[in-house]
Length: 73
Image (tube, rainbow, N blue to C red; front, top):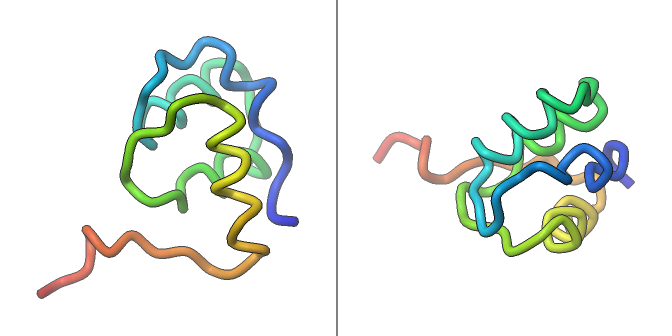
């Protein structure tokens, strides 16, 4: 399972929110690289709550993630 459960670090996130808000909230709560790294690899979309974020992280089973929005055409 990749990373650490981010939900304890996302209590101040304003849901629904995207990856940038998740990273901001987690960093402000003192999350380390084991939380911020997996959050940073999430697809750029809105997440309804912390459980949805954790499910998105776990669903990849450690596979490398990429953001297709950043890929060159």
